Length: 158
Image (tube, one colour):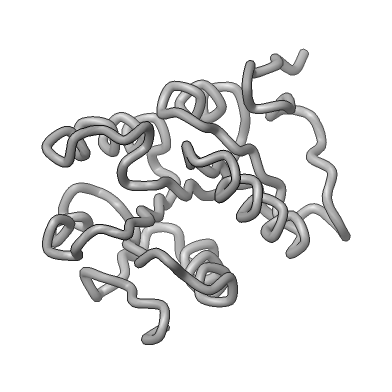
């Protein structure tokens, strides 16, 4: 039986409604409701099943309750102090393993130079174009264990 996850709005084990045939399922962890809703809707329009979590705990709960192919997370969910970023990101990574995880950030790339060494698949600069996100997602879904070679994926270089 599928479990309902509060504040996410769907049960991750049930069929996710979107346009076209189901392809891959994604957990999107973004605490800004408007940004998260926009990204989720755009991804659904590209035939991805999406569960939008607004906190690390909701994301971890969704990962435990369903089967997913990829995680996209904001680097600073719930506006944590920059010194705490790795604690929450590693909590997401540990719940997601072995799934590829994309970190999205508007912060300086120098704060994230060791993302690959810490087990994350890619880093994407905000703001980003949907096509750039989709290209990165497709690459990771084709080869989930691959790490991106650049420490910072600037959308203009994808």
